[in-house]
Image (tube, rainbow over all chains, first blue to last red; front, side, top):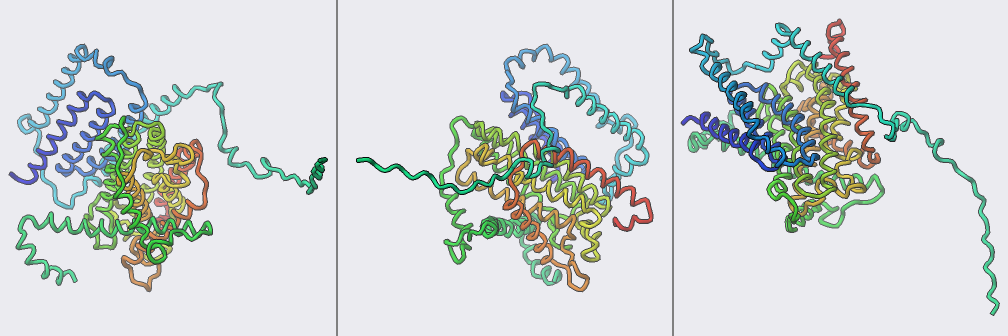
Length: 205
Length: 346
């Protein structure tokens, strides 16, 4: 067996096991960590496919930011797992539907040659797909790309506006004013003249 | 030199056959990691000495001449101590925590160019790789904090993850400015784009980004004045409060390895890497070593000078000061490149 396919099978096995752990682990933190492992292995498989930009972005965005916040929330929540698992069977049809759609999509991609898609051509060794992705995003697809960016911005503003209500019972501080404080605002020196303490009384014994 | 080396290595290549590539790569990895380990051991010594002198003390001076064997004594002491695993801890993750802190700190060195040719893997997306790998370091801290099953450790982990995620954005934006100027993600090309002497390095045209990167770097490292994840006076020792012996030492090693890494990246991106500051002096490894030492000295100096930031002030600095500053400067650089003054940013 070629070394590359060996690596592929090792990565795929890890990916499958990690993905299974995501839904079977009893502890939600273990689930989240398995998801991190699954993402990382998927990035490894993408590297094998010479999609280095996608692979590195996956690690940077999903592992480096999204999953950290995920873990942050999961760690702080007191999740009752039995409660969560109760709905397993009722969610099964929806899950099967999603799985079926994903299988269909995979068939369309992998069987593309039979359906009339052209096979991807092998690229030269010095081909940088980071550059290619960037060039395509900012020329041919610049409007959809900007639109997606604006949509994300609107979603972000909306999320902040919905959750950030003014609370009256919170103690508010303005760090901008705090850092402007000078020594003279807080501290004043008092010049106290040295005083002689009263002489101790003589013992009358 | 390459030719003589090649003739020397030819019999070895023939002897090992297909196993040659992994063996040779492993040798290179050891050639990077072993000096790094020695450097970080002596960085701890330098830290104690420098801060000692800044506070009018003498620092370690008992073990060996002027205390030079102190790091080795410390290492031996930690090696011989028992590793205590708290009874309520999640054993597997508790052990995994320190490993996950150290591994990214070492893995990032794979693409680090010490000189133009002295680099383990000269990859196109080097800058992205470094950002991706360093962003994984936070997992070790979070896992260690959670698996310890201790309130202090948990608080430390939460603080650390929030802080690292906030400052990573500012750091990333600062590097966006660098790659706009260098027009490359390759670290060797980024350094080469700065050639021409002291005034051509990116610290000058990207001065706000340089300052943001330096400060955000200190915050990413969880070092004073941003060391709220450890916060000895508030939460004992933060995320590593339950660790002892060698498992604690691994956290310690990772912190210093990360310090050298951030100092190295600062030298590559903004201080011209291995390039010499004057046109009449040759470029070389000496310069990057000097620049890294200079940035490391700044880190030690910060620690001896500034009191710890309050947590809300850290968040304010990251989100409300650094991110707007970097975004503004990216727009300035981008706009200036369209004008006749664009040459200033190349």
